[in-house]
Amino acid sequence: MKKKKEEFYYKNLCSAMEYAYQAAQFLTETLKHFDKETIQEKLDAMHELEQKGDVKKHKMMKALSQAFITPIEREDLVSLSGYIDDITDAVEEVLLQIYMSNVTEIRTDVFPTLDLLSESIKALGDVMEELKDFKHSKVIEDYIIRVNDLEEQGDRLYVENMHTLHGEEDIRTIVIWRTIYEYLETCIDTCEHVADIVGMVIMKNS
Image (cartoon, rainbow, N blue to C red; front, side, top):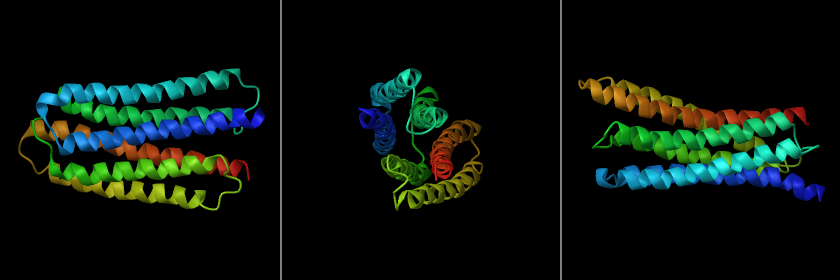
C-alpha cells in the first residue's frame, strides 16, 4: 500500500508533463498550419489540455493535504506540480495572445523556439520518469544537464529573435511578438527551474 501511494505522486507528475508536451506540440502544429478562421476552436482544444493539467495539480494538492508521509518533501512536490502546471498555462497563453492580438500571419522565426520548447518539455519528462528511482538512476543527472543546455539555447534564440524583431518598423508587430516570445522564454526557463528543483531533491536525499 505504501509503495502504491508513493507511485501516485510520481505518476501524477509524469502525467502532468505529458499534458504540457501535448500542449506544446498542439501549439506548434496550430501555428505551422495557421488559419485565422479556426483559431477559436484551437483555443478551445488547447484549454481542454490546460484543464487536464489543472486536474493533475488539484489531485496532487488533495493527496498532499491528506498524506502523513510523502516520498520526498511535501514542499518539493508542491513546487514541482505547480511549476509544471505553469508550463502548460504559459503554452496556452501564447495561443491566447495570438488570438487576442488578432494576429493574421505567423513569423517564421518562431518555429525554432517552438521546436526547442517541445524538446525541453520532453527532456524534462525524461527527468520526471527517473524521479521515482532517483537514488539509483544512472541517467537522471544527465537528463537535468540536458534541460539546462536547452535553456541556454533558448536564451540565445530569444536574444536573436528580439534583435530581429526590433528591426521592424511596425510598432504593433513589435509589441505583439515581444509578448509572445517572452511567454515562450518563460516556458523554457520554467523547464530548467523544475529540473533544478529535482537536482536539489537529489542532493538533499543523497
